[in-house]
Length: 555
Image (cartoon, rainbow, N blue to C red):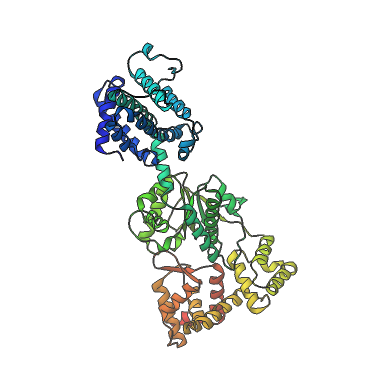
C-alpha cells in the first residue's frame, strides 16, 4: 500500500496534468483518489513495485550524477505496468517479470508508447518532435516517453534538473493511473479473481476429497446408472452427462435406496478429480443437510467450515460459481422450522446464481412434502435393466461364489430380478446370497433375518429379539407416515400383548432407524424407508395374528 506521504507526492505532481484533462475540480479529485486506490489494489497482486516508494525517496535525495541510475531503477515500475496492461490485453506482453534483467528494454519503451495510444489512438510518437506538439496532456506524455527512453538506453549522461525528473516521473504515473481508471472494472475483476484463487488450496482440498471418497466407496464399485427427467420418462442421462451439461440446478428425487446419496458422493469425486487434473471447474462442497446448524446463511456457513475459510470468502466463491454445492437429504431434516429456512436459502441461492452448480437430493415425490428448489431440473432413477443389474453384480459381488450364483440366476431365472428395482435392493440381494449361498424364495425375509442376525452377533443388542414384532405393529398403523409418539404407543402396546418386560420402546425405535428400516420424515414423523419393508412387516403382522390381537386389545 502507498503511504500517505507518497500519495500526497503523487497528487502534487499529477494534479496539474489532470487539471488540463478534467476541468471540473470535484471530478478531478474523485478520479485521482479512485485511481490511487486502484493502483494500490492492483499492486497487491504484483510485488514488482515493492521498492517503488524507496525509489522515489532515493531519487529526491540523489545528486545529478546519481539520478540517472535511480531513474533506471525506477523503470522497474514498468514491470507493474506490463502486468497491469496484460489484464486487458493479455497477448501483448508475456515477458516474465522475474526475468527483467534479461529483457530488451525496447519492449518496455514500446509498452509505454502503447499506453499513450490508449489515451489518444491517433497520436503517433514515432518521428514526432516535441517542439511541434501542442501544449497540454499529449505533450506531457511525449516528453515523458522521450526522456524515459533516453535514460533507459543511456543516451544522456546526466539529468540536470530535479524538477524535470519529477515531471517525467509524474507523467509516467499519469499513464499508470489513467490505465487503472480506464480499465477499473477489469482490474477489480482481476483482483477479485486472484484473491478468490488464494482463498483455498484447491489442489490440496480436492486431494482430501478424493481420499475421503476412497474410504466411502471402499469395497463398493460405482455403476453409472442413468437418471431420467421426471417429466420425460423416455430420456436417460448418466451422472457424468449431468455434470457436464448446462443444467446447473439439479434435484435428484426418489425413494430410499435409489442411489441419491451415492450419486452425490460420486459427483463430488468426479468434480474433485477434474479440478486436480485440469485446474478447472468448481470445487465440490458436499453437505449433509440434517447435520446443519440453525442461524443465518446456514448453507454458506457450513460450506465455509468445510472449506476452512471465512464466510465472506465463501460467499465470494458462491457468487462467482467457483464452488459446487452438493446438498444431501433435504427430507431428513427433522425440525420443520429449520427445514423451511434451508429451503428458502436453497431457493435464493438458485435464483441469484444461475451459473452456480447446485445438486439437491430429496426422498419423497408426494405433494405433501415441503416445496424446495422448484426451479431445478428434477430427475429420478431410470429403471435398471437386467444388463445394469448384471454389471452391478459383477462389480460388487464380494467373492467368486456369490457372483457365480447370481449370474446363473440372471441367466436361468431373470424374473427374480424384476422386483429388484434399486441399487440398495440389489446390494441387499448380494448380501443375502453371500450369507445363505443361494437365492432364497423370499429375498426380503432372508435379507431382514440376515440383517438382524448380524446386528445381534456384532453389537449383542438384546432389543433385536423384540424388534420384528414392533415393526409389524408399526406397519399396520393407519398412515404410511406416523408420529414418534404414535410409534412409541404402538410398541408399548405390543410389549403388553406379548408380555415383554425387557425391551425399551425408545431404544427399539432408535435401533430400527439405525438399521435403515425406518427413517425420519419431517418433524417428529417416521416411516418405513422402503415400500418393500412396509409390505413385508404388514403381511407378517397379519400372518402371525398380531394384528387381530392389537385390534382386540384396542376395542
